[in-house]
Image 1: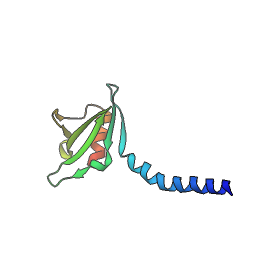
Image 2 (image 1 turned 30 degrees about the vertical axis):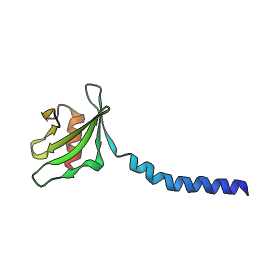
Image 3 (image 1 turned 135 degrees about the horizontal axis):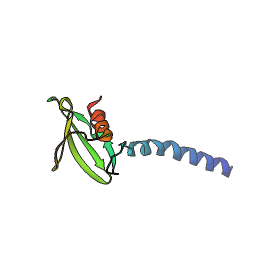
Image 4 (image 1 turned 120 degrees about the vertical axis):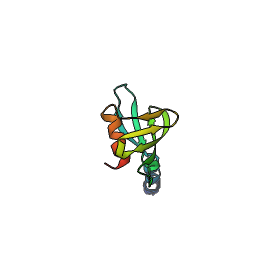
Amino acid sequence: MKIQALIATVIATALTTTPVLAQLSTWVYMGQADSGESIYVNRDSIVYQQQNHVDFVYKVDDEVIAGIAYCQENRWYASEEGIYSPSGSVTQSMVNYVCGV
C-alpha cells in the first residue's frame, strides 16, 4: 500500500510540475556569436507593433537587453547601445526569429 501511495505522489507531482517547468523556458537559444557569446531571445517578450517594428528582449550571455527590430530594414535597436545590422548568422537568426521570417 505504501508503494502505491508513493507512486501516486510522484505521478501527481510530475503532472503539476511539468507545466511550471515549461513556462520557465521562455528563452530561445539563437546560437553562439563569433565573439563566443550565447544569444537568446525571450519568446514571450515579442510584441508586433503597427509601425513596422517588433519589440523584444534578448540576452547576450547573462546581459538582458531590450530591443526593437526594424524588420523591413533588417536592423535592430538595442537599448542604450544603438542601431545594429546583423553581422553574422546568429544575429541574423535573431532578427529573423523576432520578425517571423
